[in-house]
Length: 337
Ligand code: NAD
Ligand code: UD1
Image 1 (cartoon, rainbow, N blue to C red):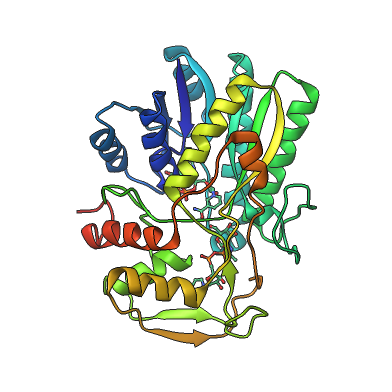
Image 2 (image 1 turned 90 degrees about the vertical axis):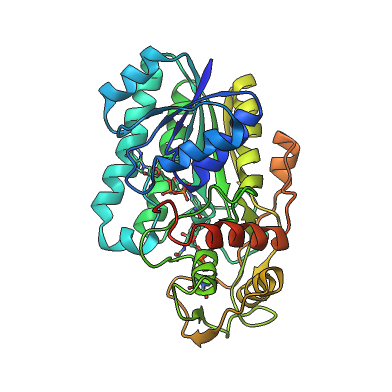
């Protein structure tokens, strides 16, 4: 019996493969390597001493999916595969709808053919739209303000309609807050293509000398130090959350949206300062205007994950910074040697 991990060669997928293997699950990965390298899976094998069966295929390809379901006894699916850059999604919306929505439809159609009705989906705190109240709870209204966010929002609805039509399904919609950090081995981590959009990869690339200085997007927010506050979560905690979610969907039917966050808000200045303190490396910065669409404060109420999955985040910001730096400094060009 195996778990199919779509997008398993990517940042969160590779860390989740490690934790799934450590928990004793057999793992099969499908990834088209559009935003990743198969080297990450070799390193997953090195870390765990276990093998990962890998198919370099596109999840939109139903015949490729059928082959995987025929060749393996799949019990459940963790669905990471998708495009995730907000700015790119505004420039290329159809590419985002084509990939993220089509691949999910192809996946659940083939899952239905093979009577596999257990799925853990990578949603995002982005589905809370422009919510102004923190902490965010799962029962708050959802919406989306850019094509990337809309794909997550639509897919939540697609899976919800699917469950309503057939109550044998078990669906976990995991709403991630801000994943950062890397495996403590320094062998796998986040490897963004081009200039990073997100804060932590930007900080670490400044620290390693690939970028000159951090641009802080606004210091006039309604927060204690004026910079944006987010809920940064260590990718290993996030990965462990997936193990718990798989355990959960395997023994239940139903549909649940679940926040995966720490419940703690950390500002841009606080994260930068923590990184400098943890690594001893300077990160020069300049304050720029706000980035359109950014909220003052976004952090989770993480109590549902604790109650339902028995999961809470354990690693702190210091560990997130130390582990990011171990990966970044040991692999300045990511998986490219
Ligand atoms: P990632 O880009 O590192 O991983 C996604 C993987 O999916 C990549 O390896 C890519 O090659 C693969 N992929 C994309 N389209 C595919 C397709 N059609 N067929 C097969 N493989 C395909 O991204 P990540 O940071 O690991 O994110 C994983 C998931 O979590 C994504 O769905 C993302 O939207 C979601 N998410 C990420 C964050 C974050 O901050 N990283 C936050 C919230 C939600
Ligand atoms: C971004 C995405 C969101 C996605 C999330 C996790 C946007 C508008 N939103 O959210 O959809 O779900 O990542 O992948 O892109 N910051 C800087 N300088 C930088 C980068 C960021 O000051 O170079 C600030 C931002 O203004 C924000 C904080 O750092 O206050 C975190 O930004 P980021 O890492 O991009 O995450 P989110 O904005 O939470």
